[in-house]
Length: 231
Length: 137
Image (cartoon, rainbow over the protein chains, first blue to last red):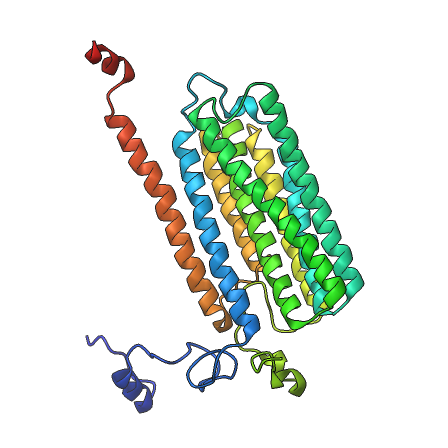
C-alpha cells in the first residue's frame, strides 16, 4: 500500500513538493502577512506584543532559576543533620492563609487589568491597592513564620535541608516584596501619568509577574509544605 | 514623540484585530470577558487548592499515593493559571508564547529530574559515613 492517500487537490501536492514543511506560513489564520505580527514583510510587531513577550521570556528564565532552588530542596530534604525535619517546622494553617491571600491577590490583579482595559482609573487603583494589601498580608505571614522558626533556633545554618528551605521560600518572599514595591510605583504612575501606552505596557508586565509568582507558590506549597507534612 | 510611538492603527480602529498577542494580553474585549475569565480561574483554583490541602492531611486515599495526587493537582492548577490568568492558548496568535513556555518547561524538567536522579545515584554510591571515619584511622 502506498503511504500517500488520495490527494485533496493537485495544488496541495504541488505545495507539499515545493515546500514540505510549509516554511513561512502560519498554520492557521490569514494566508498573507498580517500587519503588526512581525511576520514577513509586514514590518515590526506592535510594541505591546514585543514588551509582553520579552517580559514573558524573563519570567520563564526566573522560573528556571526557581527550579534550581526546587531541585536543591528536593535533593537536600533528607539532610537534616539531626535537626528538625519539615513536618516539625510547618504550620499548615498559616500556609493555607498565605495561599488564600496570594490566590486572591492574583484574582484582584486581573480585575485591575480589566479596569485598565476599560480605562477606569478608580477601579484600577482600588484593585491594585487590594492586590498590594493581600501581597503585604502574605509577606507578613511569611515573616512571622521565619521569626518564629528563628526563635526556636531553626535557622538556615542548622542543616542542609533548612538552608534550601529558607533559600527557596525566602527567594519567593523576596519576589513578592519587590513585586509590592513595583506595584506601589505603578499606582503612582497610573495616578500621575494616566493610561499612556507605555504605562499600560508596564501594567501588562506587572500582571504577568504577579501571576507567575502565584504559579511558583503553587509549586512551593505543594512540594515543600504539603508533601513534607502530610505524606 | 518618536516614530515608533506613533501607531496609525490606534486612530483607524484596526487595533482591535491584532492577530498576535503577548501573554497576559488579549484582543480588546469588554471587561465582562476579563472578569468572567478571572472568576473561572479563581473558582478552579479554589477547588484544586482546597483538594490539595484536604488530601495532604487525610486518609481518604491510599497513603503512598498522596504525593502523586498532590503533584497532579499542582500541575492542574498551574495549567488553570496559565489559561485563565496568563491567557496562554493554543491559538495561532499564541504560537510564540507557547513555544517559549515549552522550552522553559523542558529546562525546568531537566534541572529538577536531572538533579534528583544524579544526586540519588551519588548518595547510593557513596561510602557510608562510619566506614569513612574508620578508614581515616
